[in-house]
Length: 292
Image (cartoon, rainbow, N blue to C red; front, top):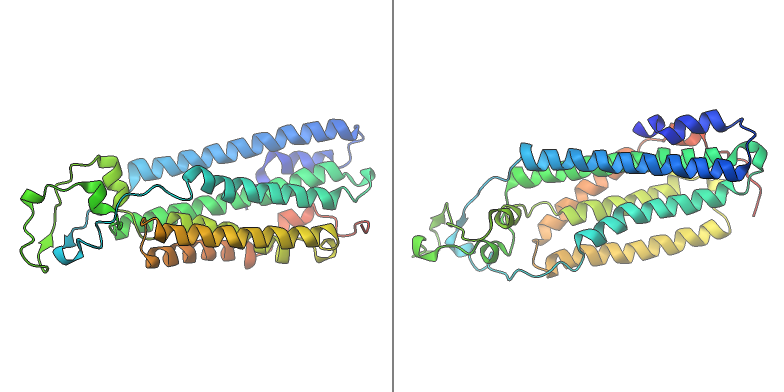
């Protein structure tokens, strides 16, 4: 995928035969890795904001009067904030890959070009993850806008003009709630299905599973890395379960929203990291390592 076009990947190949001091190579690699990550994240953010701000808008669906109780949940704060979510699904996987690859490549002798190999392998894989993350989020947003399902707290956010709504019977259809709430908040309240939190949290979980069980060379998974795998996956399983459950208990989503969001995240991870082999990443991996 796009990871092979990164600066780390290109310079990594050039630096394999370099005889520079390892500390100098480490500084160079760190700078190039930082540039790759910043450019990738900034480009992804701009693509996301352009699409969600100017190109797609949620369908403005109405509701039946009998559904008023289901749509009148209070507006509660998110147990998993957006910042928390991004740290867990973007920063944490990067730190895991960075540490594990460091453990593997530091077992090699300096003559193998371990520093440029290390940085190239990390960035090649992580940029592919960023691309997968972006595509999964875009698909999620497209589905949200096309479905236009109202959130459980829609009426609390909307603050309708009830005097203009006829709900004499439960079968009455309310096409326009005449919302008094802010247009931005109301727009967000129309995008319940599928859950974005569920999409990215399950995507990150499946990526970590694929990384430890499919991407990393099996010969590397011994000793320290075996314990790291166990601790990371157990920790992330627990966090992922908490994230999914609180989307329902915080009254931001219906259970089916979370299920569909999780399916999108799983599908993206399956296509990118479980079904295919990252050949570009494998090129930088030296299978024969010194035993720990």
